[in-house]
Length: 249
Image (cartoon, rainbow, N blue to C red; front, side, top):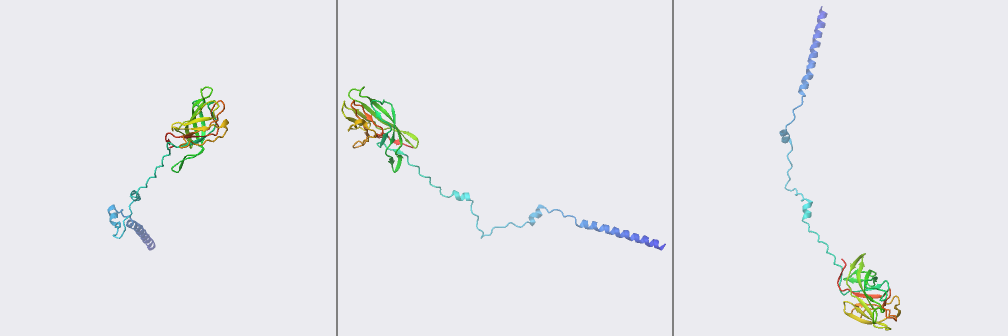
């Protein structure tokens, strides 16, 4: 009887001990419950104060854009000088083909090339070899014109850098004076200058003719045949004077 009572008391003690152990974790859980989040006011209160610049701290540099705006503006490059060949300039050209009073007609065109470069203010505006286009302004054969033959030519344009430029120049004119005569009158149209030059018998190829004395208004070589025809051989040197300024810009 006493043993049963002892077992019963031991069981009761064990139950009480188990009950006490089960209550301790709850208490600890209650103690570890999370704290409510701090409010914005608490955060601001706990935030460190903004660092104030000291008196010895140098001021920051102004923005780069402001610095560049105050810089002096660069001077623009000077405009290039216009390319102008003044009136009165003499262009000496070499004919590519022969021109004759018997075969040529008024309005017929011809080609030539510049013999001497045209330099203005130290700049070569028209190089030697530049292509020239010309026109026959008058051509009369001795058989159709009583008293002799007539031949007059001028130049109309020059090509520089692949671009043709229209120009105004004097007219070179030559007239035979009579049958059997080996002389011809030469007139530089627009310049009012004239001269008498000796005819080159047969008008051989490559005839070279000098400029007029006192101005070079117009020069030409003439091959005077027995029937008074006028011929300017191929490669003849002929000079023309510009009557107006030539703008190459």
